Amino acid sequence: MVCANGRPQLSQDQDRQLFAESAGTCVLCNTPLFAAPSSTERSISIAERAHIVAHSAAGPRGDSGVPASYRSEPANIVLLCPTCHTMADKSPDAYPKQLLLMKKAARAAAVARVGGTPIFGKREDARRAVEAVLERNTMIFHTSGPSAKDGSLPSTEAAEKWSRLVLEEIVPGNELIVAIVELNPHLATTSDRSAMELLRLHTRDLAEKHRGGPLTAPAIRFPKVAEQIFAGEL
Figure (cartoon, rainbow, N blue to C red):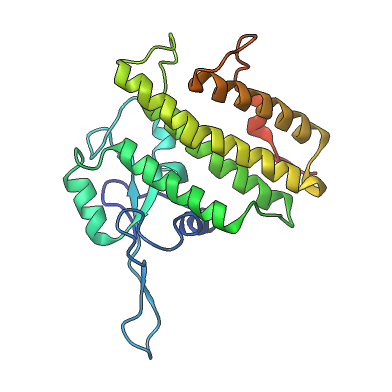
C-alpha cells in the first residue's frame, strides 16, 4: 500500500482522510479497493498510495519546483488500484500531475456533495477537514499557479488552465472551509470567524477575477490567517 517511488509516511488519520475522499475506490477506474475473496474470508485492501508529483524530482511526474516537504503530504497522494498505479507511473505523460490532481479533487468534491458539509464534535476534527482543503489548494497552486516571483504564467494555455482550476477546485474548496466554520460555531473562536469572513471576501474576488467579472477595487489576496482556522485550542 505504498508507492515504490518514495514511501509516504502518513498518519492513521491522514490515511482515513484519503480513503474517505476517494470513497474507497480507485479515482481513475472506480475499482473498489477492498476485495472479498470469498464469503468466509476478510476483505483485502488492494489500495496503493501513489504520488501525484513524484517523491524524487527524477521520478514519474517529478518536479523540482514543488517543495520536497509537500511531496509526501496527503494533498500529493492519491489512492489507486495496482493496475492504475502501474500505468500512471510507467506512462507519466498519459497521466500528468494536472490530471491526477483534478481526478483527486473531483472525487473529493463529489463525496463532499453527497455527504454534505459535516458537523464536528471536536475542534481537532474540524481542523483536519480544513487542513485537507488547504493542502489540496496549495498543491494545485504549486503545480499550476502563477510564478511566485512575478505572477506570470508560461503560456495562454497555462493561464486558461489556471483559471479553470481556480473556478472548479480552489473556489469550491474555500467555500467549503467557510461552510465548515458557519456550521460549526460551537468550535469556532472569534479569530476563526474573522478569518472566515476574510476568506469569503477573497474567494468572491477570486471568482469574479477568473470569470472576467468587474472588480471595483483590487482583489483581496488570500488571507494568511485563514491557514490558522480551527488551529490550537478553543
